[in-house]
Image (cartoon, rainbow, N blue to C red; front, top):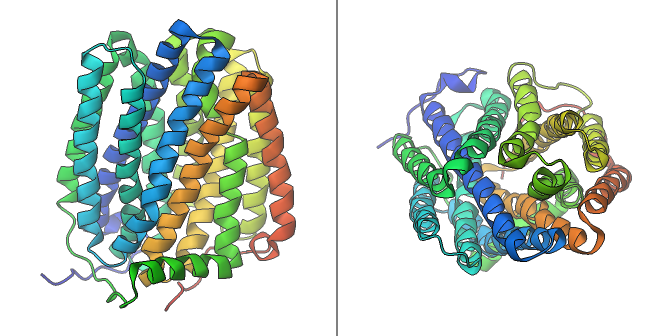
Length: 420
């Protein structure tokens, strides 16, 4: 079957295959977030039955560690495969794997066993599925739209994630009252529906893969990132800022033992960053940033750090919600700029490998950030851990602004893509 020609349009939804991709990504994101929220609450609740807040916080961090290890090990392989095999089939295979894996978690939760190691093991398997899903989907999206519609596609991709990040925790906060097995059952259905919509995406044109060996190919991708100050600076800024400023990892502790708002409040806290991010993402989808994007990026990472500090010291539930919403809005602008710069500066033949490295960095910033927060909370306490993380994010912003002048001076998201 020949790839279908695409109309020239600046709106990503003008493209039929992107519409199916958007729905697939939305369903996958919603299921992924529901599972993450469920596992966080499950692990913390079980750990608190036999340990202190600090010990339970450490267990939360360990969930992030096992997922990061799985993603770090398999992402580079997934990136190599994404540049050589039809990315649609990699995405479909990852979704099928997630259906099976989350079904195992649902079945284990129904059994009412209280051991934590099976949850950690399944979390690692979920990390494997995500390791293949992220680079294949990220590198497929630019092939579904014309270059003129790429900023729109990137913005709407973020919107799909943020919609899920708002709805998923809010739903979980209510559903947990009826049992975690319901949360996981719904997630299985959502992954299955995502698999169905992914089947509707038609073939797209891909450049012929090189004859490099797998190791040489992966090295080429790493060398490209290292030799591109804009790409390296953008993804590494996100890595270190979010590792240090990972307040969301401690939300179960804040909901149960600091703000005392229970599972319903936990769902609202978990959704607040995504609500702020979603509002900004919708604005960016219709009115993307046009000038001084480098300064915008660094400024928003600084706001992210300040918001983290405010959340850390807050004992007011409304103030905590506002701080998290501002945190999410600032992070959304930073992510939008980073993803746009990376896509524009990366040639299509290398997008899978670059996306896989970006996936490792994003996973490190999220899952490894959770582990860092758990370790810090174990020895410092939850509140000092969050505050120290916000201060660290501010310091990283200053250091990266000095080290990556090309990124700081980036002015526009327009321009031609890189070519091989």
